Length: 132
Image (tube, rainbow, N blue to C red; front, side, top):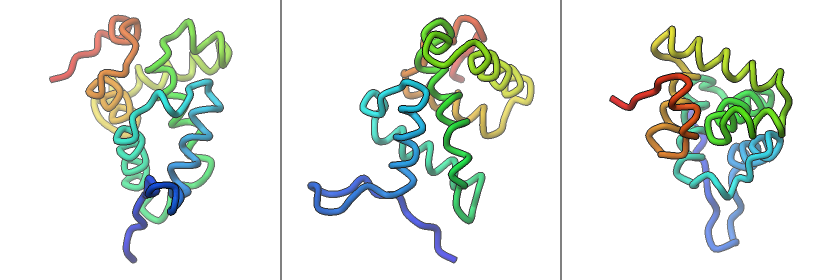
């Protein structure tokens, strides 16, 4: 079966693909406006999701991805103010696990935020992140 492609739309004639709309909604749910994330980064996120869920990422996959990415962008204080301490601690736990594992889906999301230069400097410092 051919992999479904994501679409940004074209001049308002063709709409955005469902996966990008779901990601935008998930980003909004963690208080990160989708306009603050470049389209190329969002396309990369949905492509990483398609690699992890080859048939189709389930709707339940988008909120945890947005949670981790939102934490990386906002930083711990702002993220906790908007989403609560429990979600902040969960995002930090996932980053620590990704760093310990050295690879994986969560590591890819953190690395994407780092390479896209969207990551909060406090997150970089707290977890001693480097781009090699």
